[in-house]
Image (cartoon, rainbow, N blue to C red; front, side, top):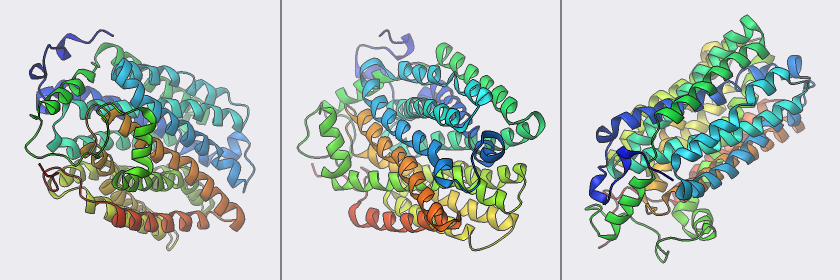
Length: 440
């Protein structure tokens, strides 16, 4: 694969790490993740709220309603796994481009959908798009930013993405009210995906050379004054299964982060599929649902402007643990009160907890995985994390099904978050190399 001229060089010295030093590409990648957020956000408010009236899902069919999120989680999780490994072979830009190509049919499938099964199929393609594209925007930024900027980098990345999710939910709610749900989503989705393809082809550059250069510096022991606490007894270029085992159970720190990532996606599955239905059953209008659900996304996205940077200063451990517990508390508060203001504040609390943990779980993985297989490690972490969509959607669907109410789904998620936070507290440790460096 031919690398862009700006990112080629004969030695590690030719590539300088840092946000300011690579600001143009950093901005391009932020625009990419904003468009990725728009793409998933267009499926958030309108589709679940109108599943009964527009797509033929019978009232109270909670398991059928959650089917599209289960499909999304399984597919996105698998594609995260593939994306990390594939990007180390063909480059980050090529994987990003493949993700956008996979998204092209989605708006058309929603527009012409004769039944809910078409929505599930469209969501499978959405999982491919999100697994490839969101993974690459994150990995690419980590390639060319310094270790002391990882929290900030991931905070900005997730800020851009989840502000996109929130904005898309509100915009499509108004578009559906004005144009009808099918036409509104067709126009919005077509514009977003078309723009993303053009920007990827014309302006995005590949960042894999940065990871290669960092690995060379690390081998020369010139990478940093603070040595990261990398897993011991691992080869420089471990196989896929070896990395999977490390991330999943062999390294207790990485396993703790992976399980926390999986469980925190229960919240997102709840907000996606059950929160709109919960509010609609209580007489809330579609635009108001967009604003309440959007409050979760806005606070989540906006708070990451400082929660990522905060972890660069105070470490990853406590923001991650407290974030799990605060987010779970916000979910529980939703069902303990009534009214637009109460639900908005509860959603905001859940969003703030998510902002504390979301960029910093990924930063913890990046802290203690070497550059030669960091892309694979992040891909496997994201595999477990986004598998949480599927497991969480199935769990909350079963809870709602057997209780006959969406309220049980909220309690299922809140309790899961409390327990997972406890596991992270017991098994985890501080990963920031400055605050908890490895011995010489």
